Amino acid sequence: GDSVTQMEGPVTLSEEAFLTINCTYTATGYPSLFWYVQYPGEGLQLLLKATKADDKGSNKGFEATYRKETTSFHLEKGSVQVSDSAVYFCALPSGYSTLTFGKGTMLLVSP
Amino acid sequence: DAMVIQNPRYQVTQFGKPVTLSCSQTLNHNVMYWYQQKSSQAPKLLFHYYDKDFNNEADTPDNFQSRRPNTSFCFLDIRSPGLGDAAMYLCATSRGRGQPRDIQYFGAGTRLSVL
Image 1 (tube, rainbow over the protein chains, first blue to last red):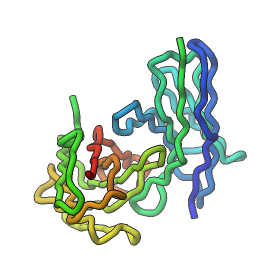
Image 2: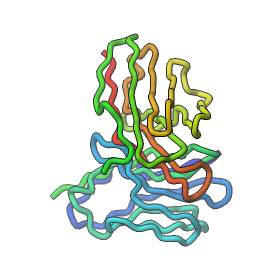
Image 3: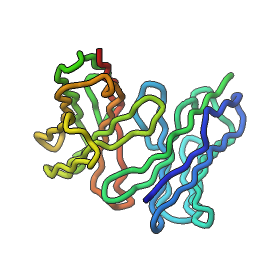
């Protein structure tokens, strides 16, 4: 079945550091890929998406490129802020209605 | 402007006492979902409605039920909450299912505590 593997956290960075959160997937075909973010005590927000191979999704300074050769969708940001502290979930549509999520990666950014 | 609204944000109930969580949407989406998210885990789909058609996940306990009286509202009923049902409950909506454009939009969640 479909699966998503994310790097384990927490990832601890200082403000203005470079961020990479790795995500790889196993799926049939070439599904859309998503990054969702969950701020403390909140629901999930769609951060960015890519619908086909080589697409780059971007939002709020975050980027991720859909790489079918490596079945990856790594999340990057050039300079993190304290306000980026949250849990990040990589996800793909699975079956007719389900989103398959990775386990989530907590990011902690200190001033 | 909130598009998927969950009430209440925090709910405390007693062991075995029925509880209802509510979700409303202003997106006029056809599909509404309920997820359960336990601490430090990914959300887990409980069930979803496509319009009035109810779709239960195979491993969702019978203790969990749902109602969708109209397009805008959907309710999660827990008939006899146990301590293990304490979690964040997330409502989500999407325009359709199975297409790349059918992105799921989530509410802020209701955190349920069971005493």
